Image 1 (cartoon, one colour):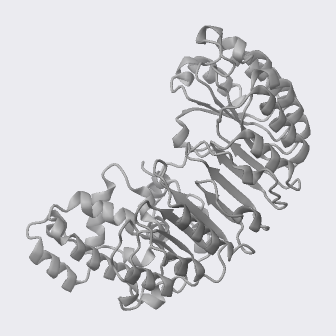
Image 2 (cartoon, rainbow, N blue to C red):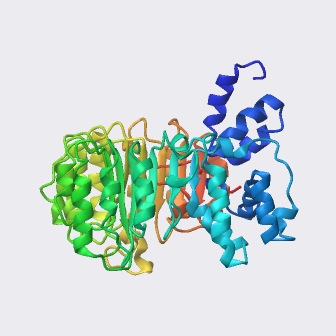
Length: 487
């Protein structure tokens, strides 16, 4: 390892960019490794925030300020822990940053600085530190009611010459918006947050500026009413990029025909935000190149229609729980195994009476690599004392062991009431001779503890590679190894 080319070592460590703990342990090996790892960690330092790291990060940022800026702050904040603890940094950390997340910076400053009247001056000094002719920012995050005109800072053209991603909201003021418009011509990814009662129609200029938008996320507040006329304006402006857009996320039923305009769409994410809309726009929607479909709180019936209108290109489907009967559950399972022969990942509710349909899916979708089953023990109206009548765990596990395609060894199972130990044991016994499984129980944090001895036994026998208890928000849907940012 010590004799490997530096470029090869960089590629190896870059694969570990989400594993902060491992990277930090490798920092101390030698100078070469340290010089390679530091830029990786500082490419996007904001993702490691938490557990007190925010103040440490702010300290490092202040230590990188020019002497003039430090003296300026020192006069304003005498005896401040930030200024008094100044120490010249070992690296030019700021030059390694590619993500400028001013949303996180603003949070840190607000939580750290007591003199609120001086926060704007501190923000200006930090902006001057990150935005100059020596830095190269590719991802920019603009917070709520941001009031700094970035285009007026020296070196801004060079700093944002390779900008690819912008996250902002509809509270942006005209003078700030004009500056963003000048620096965002090269972006291909836009996250736009719609905020109630603070909608600037001039945001359309920003949307129309990029030459080639590939990814768009149009998000709105979960619990507030949306200005329909303004929302329509935004959708119509986004339609101008319809030929190029490949990834699209929306958190409200659209008003226009925006979805049907994205003829080259490969990834679609829908979230109704509990608004209980009908989403009829999906009924006759044809997206022939769609590869990934993720949906939350969207009616099962219209999602079934959408899947039926694809061109057998879907390889990932993630549908969170939404209330529906056993007939619609059966129809969507059938649509999946008829129209998705190359499916690799699936997250779906499976009703007790449709376990046989799941078996057909396993047989026909031979490329399936990961399966996330949602089990709701109240689906058929039984109480907890009849939980085994709601889902026949024995039949479910038997089908998984018997009919899972050879590539399928990664399972997630969400439930409210856990299966009996004998059903788990039978599943493991029948899995002998197959690829060691990755397994997650979700919804009951004590499940693995209840099955601890059983799981350890089958780990020793090579039947289980890894088994986790997991809260739903600690892992992505189809992620079986957790990305530990904060440890």
